[in-house]
Structures are given as C-alpha cells and as structure tokens.
Length: 529
Image (spheres, rainbow, N blue to C red):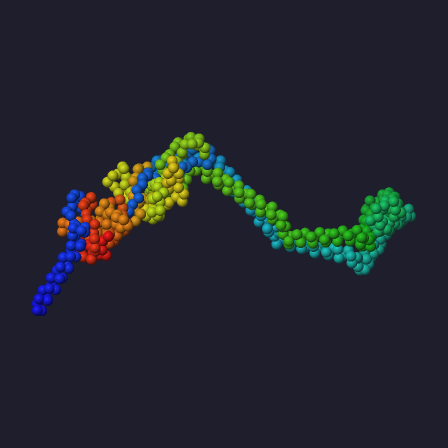
C-alpha cells in the first residue's frame, strides 16, 4: 500500500513537470524553432569605449609673426629658417648708432635732474648754516653797540686825543720859528671853522629823515660852515707854504693829527643816529631770515618742480630704451623659425604686409576641431583622444581635450563648437599642417559583458536578445548599459559565453516564466515578457 502511494506521488510530480514544460515550450507557447538564417556572436567580457569623431589640421601651440617697431637699415640677421630659438633671443637688428646716443643723452639728463632734486631736498651744508649763524651774531652785535651808544671812557679818550694833538700842533708851529700872527690866526680860523662844521653836521644828521631837508636851516648852516672851513684851510695852507718845507711838513703832520682826533671824537658823539639804528636793525633781520631759510630747506613748490624734472628725464630714458627695443626682433618664446624674409642692408620698417619673421612652438602641437552641437555635451576637458594622420596611416597618436570654445559658430545653419586637442609627445615625422582624424573617447568601461548592437532588439518597453541553447532559439529580456557604434554593454539577462543571434530569426513569444533552462544565462530571472 505504501509503495503504491509512493509510485502515485512520482507519477503526479512527473505529470506536473510535463505540464510545466508544455506550458513553457508547448505548441501554445513560444515553441523554440530552429534558426532559419543569420549570424551568431558570443557574449564576451571586454572594454567598451564610446567615441565622437572629428577631423582637422595640426597647428603649433603658439605661432607669431614678428616685425620691427622702427625704421632703419638692417645690420644683423642672426637666424635661418628651421633654427631653434629661445625666449629673449635677438633674431635681427637695425642700425642703432643714433639710438644709442639718444639713450646716453637721456641718461645724462636724468642724472642732472636727480642731482637737482637731491640739492633741493638737502640745499644747505653745515658750513652754510655756520656762516649764516656768524652773520646773525655779527649783525646783532653791531646793532647792540649802536643802541648802547659810545661809553664815557671812549669819549674821554677821544677828547684827550684832540687836546694832545692840538698841543703837538702848537709845539710844531713854535719850533718852526713861525711867530707870524697871521699864520697863527689862520690856524685858529681853521680850527674854529672845523668845529663849526662838526656842530652843523650833528644838527643836520638829527633831521636826516625830513623829506624837505634841503630847505631847512640846518642844511644851510652846514653848507655855510663847510664853505668857511674850506676858505680857512686854503688861507692857512697858503701862509704855511711861505715857511720852510721841513717846518711846514711838521706843522702839516701835526695839523693832520688834530683833524683825525677831532673826527674820531665827532664820530663818537654823533654815531647813534636813527638811520644808523634802523639800518643795523634791518641787517639783523635779513641775517636771521637767511638763516631761517637755510634751516627750513626748499619749499614744497621747489621740491615739486625738481621731482617733475626727474620724472620727465626718466620718461625720456624709457622712450630711448623703447626705441632701441623696437630696432630689434626678439623671440617671444622658445620655438622654431618658420618664416624669414630679411636681408642685411635692406631698409626695414614696421609697416608692410609681408611677414618678416615667424616663430612657432613646434614642440607642442594641437588640432582645432569643429564639433557638432549634439556631441558637445559628451565632450569634457581632459578627455583622451585617439589621433590618426592621413600622411602617416600606420601611426596612432594619443592626445587630450585642452580647451572648448564657450560659444559656437553658425555656418550654413549648422552650429559647431571649436574644440582644441593637444598631441602627446609627437614624433619628428608629425608636422604642422597635416590632416588628422580624431576619436574623442567620451565614455569608457572595462571588463563588462559585450554583444554586437544587432543582437539587441526592442519589443515594447523592453530590450530582448535571442539566445541559442541546445539548438533552440530562446528570447530573453536584457538590461543594457552604454554602447558605441558596434557594441553594447549588457548588465543583466546574459552571461559570458552565451551565443546570441545578430540577424533576423524565427522566434516564439515566451509565455510563463518559472522554469530555468540550464546553460542559458539569464533565463528564468524574473520571467519573460
């Protein structure tokens, strides 16, 4: 009885399996059929890269046309086409003899202006200040002396000198045997007239500031006294001439001493006049003013003028230096001379359409490619590039995107964006101007499942592939990732080693979905559909 039950259970299980197989592969479902025609491919692991193609011509990273900034006779050409040059190297030069002289003259003028500025900033030496101080001291001492007037001792001494000189004079007259009363009278008249002159002079000095001084009585008195003195002196001289020459000389010498003593006394008596004090005070003020100017130095205006002179001279020097620079053609960067249209002796200038010298940086080559606007979103700075050349078909170069134009250009209704690509370590066989084809690698995945694009079809809202399993065609649902022009990444539904159809086949629609078939990746993973 127990065995009969066991047999019955096995029969029931087998029947269930048979029903399931029938439902999966029966005539009412998607019965597998033998492929009528088509090619197959094997699901493999590999690397997948998505690219955008473009084409352009190789250019140098930097290329510049150079010419002189001045006009003159070309005296030196230091390079030839193909020569490598370094930044700052002089490639050609005009005659600069006159320009050198202009620079030297400007430099001399700058030195003079700088010296003038230094003098304005420090106008006086210690010796100048010391001299000015001594002048103030001397003027002040003279002023103090005038204000204080002559001392009694000085007056007494001067009066004593007059008495002594008069006594000596009288003795000289007596010793000469001159007893002539006329000579003595003449001498007395001279003395009297001289005293009158001194008194009149003193009176006149006291009113010296009067603008009508010539019409005053003091002026008339001084004039009359002077005339009387001159008359008396002439009379005395005439009488003295009748005596002996020796006696006359002694008398005259004694007379001179009397005159000098009397003059000194008069000076002491009359030296402190208002005019003298005013003049002395003015001298003191002037000396002090001079000292203050020396101590204060130059004023702001003087300094500003001196500084402007330096600035103008400095500008002249820079202009002369610029003129010298414009008489040379200098390499702006390291590169190669690609064009040279210069001959020694010719008259060269900055004008003209012909390129005089061209320098290019051939160590850093680039390609500028116009990319379609639909491809721009997939291109990023730094993306790797594969480059092939028409002239060198067996050579593949590597590069990268280094610049993308922020704005596109519209040509015949098509918008393109210039993209600049650098070439990594180009060999010498690669030249500027060559035509290049580029593949911009916009996306890359490594070690992913790959199938040909034609192995994937779209049915409704899902993608499917047809797998060959034990001679049968089985349609499975797949999930895909990135793709390029030929291959597609499969993320689910297939496994490495599966064989898939890549051309038209006869397939049945799957129905049901709980049975997995061994050996077919992806079957039984969530059902068909």
